[in-house]
Length: 347
Image 1 (cartoon, helix red, strand yellow):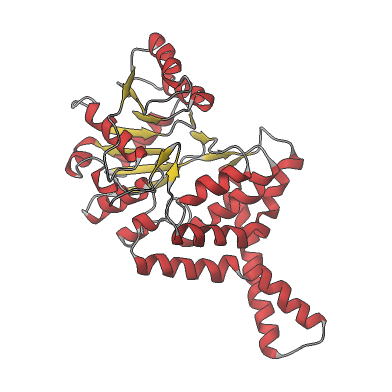
Image 2 (cartoon, rainbow, N blue to C red):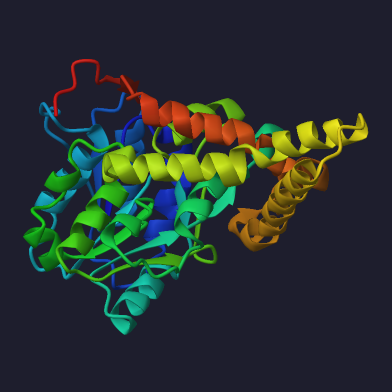
């Protein structure tokens, strides 16, 4: 198991506790720290004293052309035991169930996957999150289908780096994370590269064995998750713009268009084309609302009151904002993240 960290002390404990409860299949848990200054290494050392499977290392200075996260994962892969059969990348903000590792291993072996990742169950705490985050998640569902969808081409492959399992010999053939070194969506980039090389890639529902608390509030969600959801670093230009146009048509415009067209009808501007436009856009809004039932199990409602999580049902109202965020992300490139500057980033 490889866990990249950079100033994660406030949210790392549930991850360490969950990994410590994994069974004998886990031989080593490598925490790759990028010189944290908030006490993260000290927290890991306390855990290491109780469980010798935990190992703390520091990655080397970030080379030109590398993003921090894939660099840390690459270092963890290089440091891991050559005798290991699988490498499991886990994010520091996850909360693994004790049966996570054995479950994903069984699924990978049973379905003969070379690489498989899991979607989590999201932990949200504030009304703004419950309103915005499902709209952002829906941008992925519209483009790539629900978890478990069989991809027809490598460019349709989806993955989640929060829980990312790969056969060691496959990762060796892929030269570790080098194919994703400059990607802000390294998980999808690596998975698509593997699929293009002929390896079998899977993306399964892990909501029963993996929870994640990604961001604190709607603003962090907007800035953090929105920066990479366009997946431009894992896509070619034609696919990117096709996806953007598709999202605009099915998620970004239907609600405001419905309101405008209904207003025209109310004001007496009736025509057959206007009536058809109202029907089409209202139909898309109804479909979007019904899709909430499909993604509802992906959210942990046990930690908040109904008054908070009821905002989930209003998330279609945030769809235009979510699509705007995807367009913004597609047209820009992050210049800094987690305290690291990429202003002079070179590909």
